[in-house]
Image (cartoon, rainbow, N blue to C red; front, side):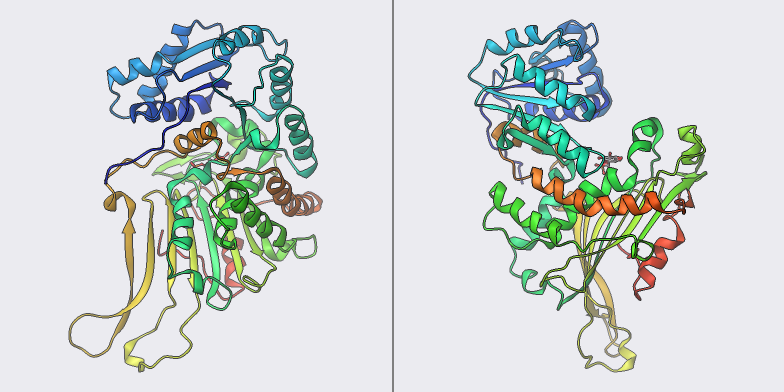
Length: 490
Ligand code: BG6
C-alpha cells in the first residue's frame, strides 16, 4: 500500500540550535524525507540559526553530512533541491545579534506560516521567545515548538510556560513529546477506537493490569551532563511514559480534535493516585547502572561515565501507578524505564483477566489469560495472545499462541520517524499530538511528590549491572502483587 500525505501550506521554519544534536539526528533528516515525498511546498524555506560563523553554503554542507550519516539511500537530485531550501543566520541569543538579519529574511514573506523550532536547552526558551517578540516576528500564522524537559518540577515548569506564554498564545505553542508521533503510539488510538473488539473489555472488569516498559540498551554517553540534572523519572516518566499511560487509559474522546483528545488525557493525569512518602517504598524503585556488559562488550557504570562518584541520579525507575476512577479502580499500571538494560524495547502489555470458569479437563493444560502486546520499537507491531487447541490428534490440549501483526511485514512502507509527522503537524497547526500546558502541570503534580520523597530519603538508587533488567527490587515490585513482568513479548 502506498504511503499518502496531506499537503501543507507554504511556510518558513526557523530552527534555533541548528548546529546541535537534535537538528543533526532528527530535524534535518525528517525535513529531507518530507521533501522527498513531495510534501513540502515549492517555496518552503528552512532558516537555520546558531552561533557558529557559517555561510549559507557552510551550513548546507553541514546538513548534507548529517543526511549522509542518518539517511539511507540519499538521492542526489532530491538532496540538492532540499539543500536549496536551507538558509543560515548567525544569531547570538544572549546579545540578540543576528535577530535583525533573521527579520529581514522572514519579512520577505510575512504572509506565510512561520514556525520557530527551539532545538536548544530550556534555559534559552525564555530569552529566545522574548527576542522573537521584541523583534516583532510573531504574526497571526506563527507557532513555536519547544522540546522537553519542560521544567525540573511543577514550579519551574510554570515559570517556563509563563515566559513562553508571555509572547505566544497557547494555540501557538507546540510542546513536543516525540513519543506521541511514533507510528505505533498512534496505532494505539486506532486499535482502541477504530475497532469494536477491545473497548467493551477495556476496563477493570476485564483487565487485570497494564505494563509499560521503555527499555534502552544504551547508556547516557555524551549526555551525562544533562542527564545528571534530570534522571529517568524526569527524562522519561513525566512525559513519554505518562503520555502512553494516558492513551491507554483515557475515555474515548469526542473526536480527534486536539482539545477533545487532550481533555481526556488530562482527566487521566488528574485521576492518578498520589504517591507519597508513606507508600513510596512500596510502589517505586530507582536504580543506577554499574559497569557490566552490553552488546557483548564491557561498558562502564553511570558514575564512571559521569566522572562523579557521588551522584544519586537514577538511570532506572519502576513504579506502580493507579488511576482512581470508575474504569480503572484496582488495576495497577506498572511502569518501568531505564538505560543500559538488557535490550532496547518499548512495549505496552495489557493483561486480561483469566476466564471465569474452565470447561476443559486437566489434560488440556493451563489456560493462560489473554494478553495484548503493543510493540512500539523495535519491530513495531501488535500481538494478541490467545488460547487455541494444539493441532492434531491427542485430545483437547490447549496452548497459547500469538496472533501476530508485524507492521514492517504487513505494510511494505518506510516507517516515518516521529519528527516527520510532528513537524508537519506544527505547520498544519494541528496540536492533537502535542502537550497542552495543563497536561504538563498535571504530570508534574503527580511526579513532584515522588521526587520530593526520594530527595528526603536516606536510601540511594539501587545498583544494577549494565545489560540486565534493572534492580531485583523492580521484579519484587510486581511479584509482591502475584504478577510478573511480561518477558514473552520481548
Ligand atoms: C528522549 C530522552 O526524550 O527520549 C532520552 O531524553 C531517550 O534519554 C529518548 O534516550 C528515547 O527516545 P527513543 O525514540 O529512542 O525511544
